[in-house]
Image 1 (tube, rainbow, N blue to C red):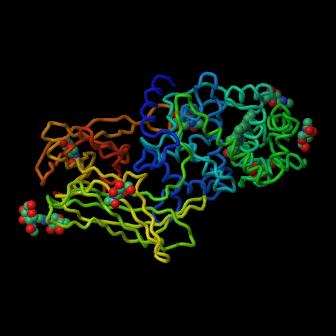
Image 2 (image 1 turned 180 degrees about the vertical axis):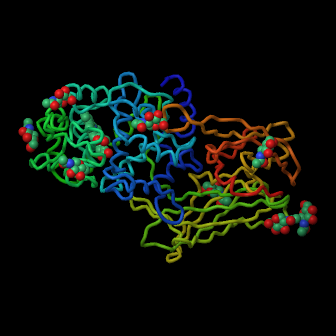
Image 3 (image 1 turned 60 degrees about the vertical axis):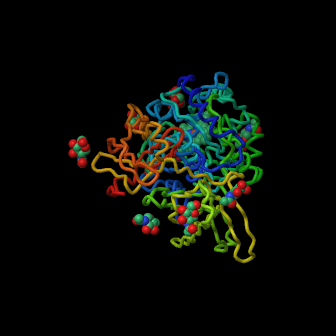
Length: 534
Ligand code: HEM
Ligand SMILES: *[C@@H]1O[C@H](CO)[C@@H](O)[C@H](O)[C@H]1NC(C)=O
Ligand SMILES: *[C@@H]1O[C@H](CO)[C@@H](O)[C@H](O)[C@H]1NC(C)=O
Ligand SMILES: *[C@@H]1O[C@H](CO)[C@@H](O)[C@H](O)[C@H]1NC(C)=O
Ligand SMILES: *[C@@H]1O[C@H](CO)[C@@H](O)[C@H](O)[C@H]1NC(C)=O
Ligand SMILES: *[C@@H]1O[C@H](CO)[C@@H](O)[C@H](O)[C@H]1NC(C)=O
Ligand SMILES: *[C@@H]1O[C@H](CO)[C@@H](O)[C@H](O)[C@H]1NC(C)=O
Ligand SMILES: *[C@@H]1O[C@H](CO)[C@@H](O)[C@H](O)[C@H]1NC(C)=O
Ligand SMILES: *[C@@H]1O[C@H](CO)[C@@H](O)[C@H](O)[C@H]1NC(C)=O
């Protein structure tokens, strides 16, 4: 991939999220955090469904999705060149699936799944990293820190994924080129080969059985991320096909595992905790091997309190509706023990003789107990709100107060001292927007003051299209121009029309009026509703 393109993209990323910054809402990485932590319950993204159960792929005998996801990350990053900074985990593998060194069904299957979550804010490379974190964490392994911000390659990269028939010296050189020592190599391969196995369909010369469903597992607990790959190797009971193949040329694990006189394998086998922490460390380094032009964030952690705005739109000239949810990270012993209220700052001070109630009440969600959970013990409680606020004062930001009912203790969440901001300069009129056939209509309400100075209102729409030789689609941003319509109070309705082909029925767009924006709005609901007049 071309370094210059990456460099330009990177400037944008750096402006958005300096590494180590305290979380500030909203963030470009909110969606990735959702995909990491919202696995089950009331509001769920369910990424982990793709690897439930860990034991197999319910639709393809002999295949194991969790193992395939892990192998995908390795094959994508293996060709990194530390000296030039080119390659690494950049989803270039999507263009490389027909190469002999990338044999098997795993890679298109993994990208086929990550495609369900692929968007302008969730790169295929970040989704591959997430896949490995969830596959390992869901199947008995450690919690690997997930950093995000990977940028996808736009074409295939260099050759050089290790293959079993190559000798130890070649493998050492390949790992060294990617920035890994012999000990790193041993740990990475052993941790990788604790799940899954070798398929007769793909490697009949290794399993000596080319039946479609034939698979020989690396250890006796092929669906659990545990040290058996190491303990069985050391105690001589291993059936690892890359250790005990009849043709010794193909025994790459045998050569690699013994490459430091078994020192690393003995450490991995010493106790399950050591195995987990060594694997977490080496897999984190594997996932964070990215092109030198990419800067990753700090590891994502579940955000203690996160607002979700589902609608912020004009109801009529006098009222603006704010609908959304608050997601609170909680602990099971304090379950259902909180009251959440929002306190807002109006955009314009109320008239001297008027009083304004700036409290917004929320209701705990009930469906599925109103909770969501992740796979690392995260538990979230959802509270919902929907209010009509007077447009004369409107709203600029809000803070959130959580009160423990049992103790009366209160915690104020104020978004790192900034309040949670809302900009009513441009509003997305979701109820007035729709798609009929392929004709999409987006309606924005834009403050007259902005339209009057001639600022044009546009939608920056991500169009999805298919690329030759890859299962992963690409995005192109189109600018759709708005047409000024009727006035509603201090706002003007702007209608933006464009056409969308079915592959773009679930992409995202920004509404932009000069400096003001509403970002990352989904097109997926447009087709499910009729355009309502305001
Ligand atoms: C010299 C390095 C390596 C060689 C030669 C090698 C070779 C292989 C081979 C031949 C297979 C069988 C694939 C199939 O039949 O579908 C395999 C599977 C696998 N490899 Fe590696 N590998 C290496 C390193 C790694 C590393 C570092 C990881 C770490 C992430 C890894 C993870 C996996 C996984 C999870 C599977 C099982 C896939 C499945 O069950 O579908 N490998 N490897
Ligand atoms: C080859 O593998 C298939 C599928 O695992 C198995 O049913 C069959 O018995 C194997 N054949 C031999 C000769 O081992
Ligand atoms: C490493 O362990 C294997 C398996 O127990 C053994 O066969 C081999 O001789 C050992 N190699 C060294 C150098 O200790
Ligand atoms: C062992 O595998 C190597 C590499 O694929 C191959 O060149 C060689 O012919 C094989 N040896 C036997 C005896 O099949
Ligand atoms: C405007 O909307 C608010 C909130 O729904 C409602 O209370 C009010 O009656 C509406 N005003 C008009 C003129 O329809
Ligand atoms: C409040 O003051 C404004 C002007 O400052 C006036 O137009 C309005 O009638 C007053 N409202 C009441 C209820 O006194
Ligand atoms: C929200 O919190 C910030 C920072 O503590 C404070 O400056 C602001 O006044 C608060 N706003 C409201 C409406 O309480
Ligand atoms: C979409 O718009 C085109 C051009 O205005 C029109 O010809 C077509 O009938 C519209 N399709 C639907 C389903 O409304
Ligand atoms: C993966 O999918 C792409 C796009 O459809 C295709 O060109 C490629 O041949 C596929 N690879 C394999 C191994 O099936």
